[in-house]
Length: 470
Ligand SMILES: Nc1ncnc2c1ncn2[C@@H]1O[C@H](COP(=O)(O)OP(=O)(O)OP(=O)(O)O)[C@@H](O)[C@H]1O
Ligand SMILES: [Mg+2]
Image (cartoon, rainbow, N blue to C red):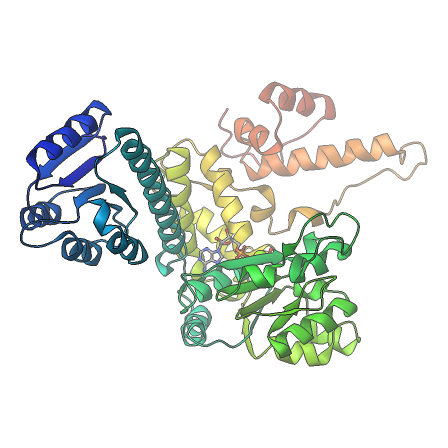
């Protein structure tokens, strides 16, 4: 297939048709010319066409009827009319009906080319945009997520019921449990999916900027407000506004937010003109907001407004049935990204992951699989590819050291203690890897030569005899 644009020309005057075709070919377009609309329509139905040039007055089906049929088949098709001067009024009406433009006879070739170029650019942009939106919808379709456990099945049902309503939704759950994912699914399954989902992370904005960011500001409303700007509420009009980390909102902005929710209108900073907004509000937090309400850090009235529907995501350790499917999903994802062909993971590795408490939830599991896949050499992920804290079932921040340190003051010095800890880590790591030095060195992020040196100088002894591999 050629990557040239295909232009369909419908012109009953053979001489004009030939001139146009010649000009188009000279500019590098493919063109097909028909003398009547009926034949052109048959061709249009069966072939890929990027733009149409059509004479308004044609024998049989006229240009307008042809245009309406084309639009029915493809509303985005750019159509340029060629008209005699006396039918310009008609042509203006056609513009209102969605024609791209009209050119009057006799045709000026420069004008023709200019219009064709612009129309094609515009339609390419629109198509790219649609493609992006489709891709986004695809990304947030269910098949890319795991909702296997009973808890998540219930949540999925709730999400589907909620999506079609306009009620405010508060999504709660520990970090990494999928709050963002749920907010996106609600939006893309709602009647608002063709409008924007606007997300604001309230924790990442300085308090002084949040107000202007949410509600907008007029020029001069504050130092630095150099132009009128709409806020996120206006941006999300007809769509969904997703306020993440809602627990971080200061009390004075909570009051303003409450007002916007009640009145369904926003007033930009420095203005007194309210603007109507039609939004569905989704909020999320990993804090216990009810606690904050009790402590008077979060307004009770706002809490009730936001919490019309609560979706509380269980931590991963309470839905372990999801772990194997999530692992499969992430192996596929990172295989694709890293160009690897990992098939599965070993039983031992799965057992270790099933026992691990995942303080960082799905995000942590995803990171662990990503890391394992990058490290893995064969077709299977093994325990060697998992981080040490998974195998010892301790989270990386809470490793405790149980080392014997001589009680004499000189020996309890900091360097001596560090040496003792270092020795302890080496012993434990080597033991866990069955004294396989390559794997132990890899886990510790040091070279094998360095590991051997440390073993020698620190006097690391093996506590287990079997299975040394090198
Ligand atoms: N049900 C699921 N199936 C598969 N992957 C998921 C699922 N839920 C979440 N994830 C993945 O886990 C990661 C964390 O999810 P997400 O960002 O939605 O969590 P979060 O609760 O918003 O976290 P935080 O509190 O840190 O903002 C993302 O990469 C997401 O794609
Ligand atoms: Mg999030």
